[in-house]
Length: 495
Image (cartoon, rainbow, N blue to C red):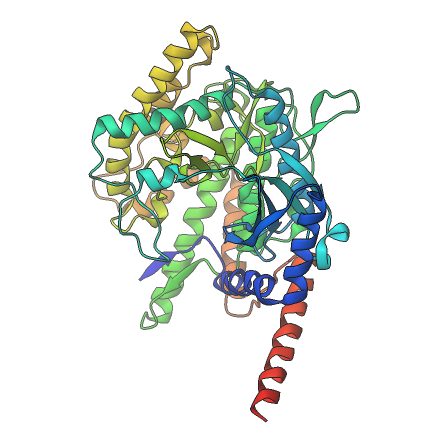
């Protein structure tokens, strides 16, 4: 009867339409296409252009490539309106972390990233498109996702791990990825947030940690931008509390929580929907309770005062480029990278199956079963990477991730660890929140009912309140105007 959704369907539709239309305009509008080519050719005035072409559109960027007669190349990347809610901030943060990694790359930190040739804000952009980054083109044959995924994927389908990969082959590929994850975890700073370089060439954290989740809650969760955190954090517990508050605000503000069958009876529908809201609110309040309890958080926050490792929300096999010999040529797409609590690095990577649990057609239990098989291979790969690094004195025993990832997986979620088993012989798992309700303070229980009541009353009256950035709003207007002129041109041709 009820299927939960992590996004507002109207916001999703608008974002998807922009994703389809915007790159097409950049490719087909002669003036815009020429402006992009000019800015690249001016950057390389001493080289002769051989090819200038559209490269691809990913989840957050549209890219163009220029190759030169000496076989070198460059890529210019523009953040996608409607998908990137903080384009200037996103580009600035990505440039900083790439420069940081370029400085740190060594035998101990073997993470190769493209060299940045130039970046600029929207006001300096060709045709006022958006902020952009110009970087070296990394020659490659494909990416790690190509080597890991099941063959035969059709356009629009999500990749999934190839079940026919032999364990030995899978371990070889996982070792290459584990080296990146391990190396990144050894880079740390003293605060949580986005990196910045000082005038004396030292690095510090001076801006908020702009995360994938923060961007998505504005893009698809209809959360007002003003509700997002704006500060850096000097301890993990304060950051976790900010995340707990953000998740509560997200649930409170999101307009559409579920798809409900049209033939459901009104009173049954209301009861089911209300309990679904209660379950979600109870879970979020309980997480905040764990964060606020000083004694309990000592049991799961390892280093409250840091140091805090560099963490990339969007690190995944598709962003790891490989050459003909399947060696790593470079790692790209460093948006939403910041320093985070070590617990982020201690959690096993979600991407071992390439597909997230919410996208797994056979359900969460089946995903967990398949994930655990892949996890055992990955942990063995990680252990081998650690052994080699320790032998070369590039790592110390206390920096191992494999044992901590194993413990993180085996310990289960925080709710189970601190509040006891979540399944009961006679209970539906979706009703477990009732067994947890007494753990909330009376005022929290009252607040849950207030929020549930408001969401039920507002559900049929809310209109989309998408707090899009000026960049996105501006491009929606420009695309409408372009479409209008295109239609007029087509009508003129008919006449």
